[in-house]
Image 1 (cartoon, helix red, strand yellow):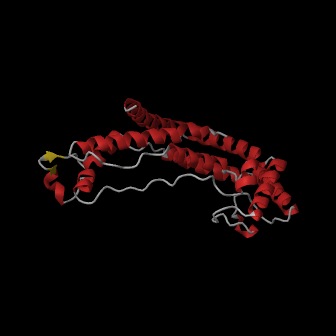
Image 2 (cartoon, helix red, strand yellow):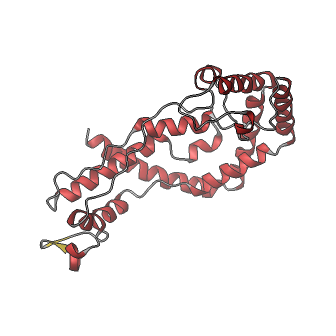
Image 3 (cartoon, one colour):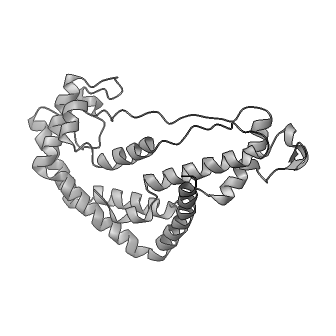
Length: 252
């Protein structure tokens, strides 16, 4: 599923290209000061894409019947985002631009950029942020959730669930009260049972389709309210992303 404001926000692939370009510039800058093995872990497109897919795929609660049958409410397994920090001492000082090793703004006689290699890279590739689009998206989601037609569809879904012995008011409510522990290593038989009922009731009431269509309308209204701000923010984001993508392609 897609929504009108998607075109104003950064995609997972754009963010991935920005991460790659940023880390490549870190390494290039640090190498000038003798740190040839400066080693932040490579960004993971799988992690970036998986996070985006799970967010959209569960916008209105779980909706994939096959996934419900195998995973219940559990998210698909994805590698954890890598944690990394520069080595203490000279490496950290040159990277951040602060520390006794870079007193006077130099390291071993070489001038370092303001803010170190990290500061230089931030100026070259600022993070592609879209706060106006994010705020508009949040308002549209809340407005759609509180829309009369959506509320009626949610009530029908809740009644369907109750007919199956499951008392829950909304598909985005915590399912813990139904005996489901989403923090467990694997889904229980109870979790699978509840998840299947959840998705089947969504299908019977056409809740996801109605909710999504309503949110589309609310997002279009948000875009119409402040088109100029959203367009400028999108253009600024695209400029940063385009520069990062060029650097990404240049390194092969």
